[in-house]
View 1: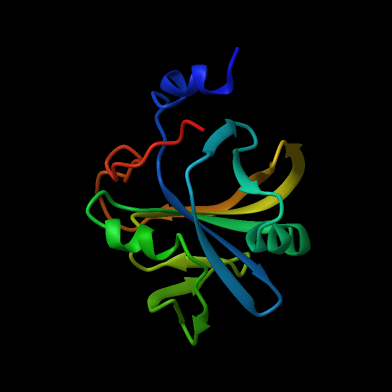
View 2: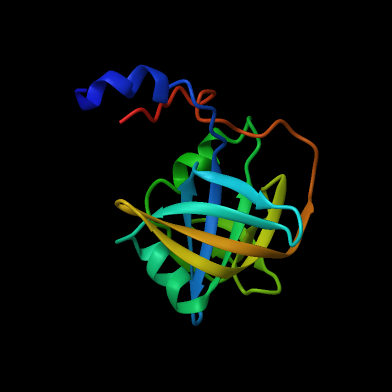
Length: 158
């Protein structure tokens, strides 16, 4: 089977869009992610796929923590900002206000909801790694429809 044969089917998979936060010492980072899912009810755990060679994955490996920020459908400019690396300036990350919680990872003030996770396991997965994290804290900051890959007009069918 040629690799492109599966592309139309892969493009039909639903994805949310999130900002995954990481830290290493005092440095914080945020990146756009869409491969995220809850993998356990007890304990509550989520898995996120992150490029193995990325700065974010290096931070997650070093600190063993990450955050997940749920972005509202109307906040497309916010998600686009985190496609590229953002630098911290005080309590802003690329001009976006944030706070830190229990893990020290960034929780965006504009996020509709957030989770903080402690890494339980990192699993190689091709050119990515799955960071499986136990949820240590989380909450909702406001009601809104979560942003999806499809709402952005993006697809992920490589």
